[in-house]
Image (cartoon, rainbow, N blue to C red; front, top):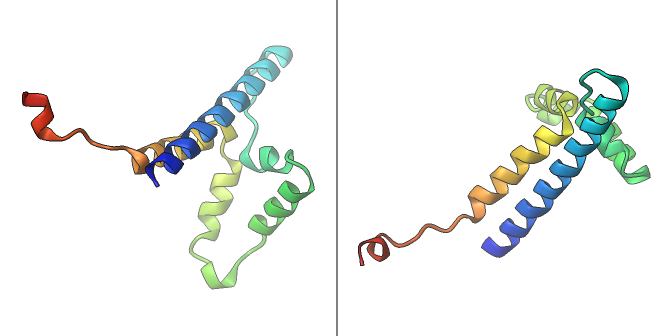
Length: 104
């Protein structure tokens, strides 16, 4: 399970770096800071990504407390969101060293 979390963390970090590189290139091209929102990045993955974004943007009466959080997350820069996801997966998959090994 830890290995899977570390792999997911690595993949999210790679995606974050790629998205940050795209943002940097576009910012240099237009001469002003430009950050791609998460909704736009997900929609860029094709038809399935577009369907996912449309499903997330619709109101959900059964989980109405999460709707503002979803709307906020979809408007944030995609590279930052994927950095946070990578950090979350890394923390889940982190393995502490035994305390006894450091005193040997």
